Amino acid sequence: MNFDLSIYDATVIPAIIFVIWVIIQIGLPKKFAPVVALVIGVAAGLALEGLSVEGLIVGVLLGAASVGFYSGTKNTIEGGTKGNGQFY
Image (tube, rainbow, N blue to C red):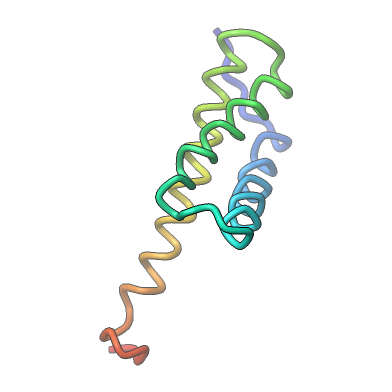
């Protein structure tokens, strides 16, 4: 198995984050966002790498990376406030 995450794969992560954001704005409950991101990631991985085990694994990695990047960024921004919107 050759897991080559190329620059094309790396650009898919922000695209997945954007698509999930749009879907949330349309009305998807936020609790389903990670599952939808994983499904979109798997679809993207299979499209980029072909219908193979490698494509499936790359897709799972892309979906998980997009969820983790979004969550980490959100928690970093929200974690720096006292709860009233002011930074410590």
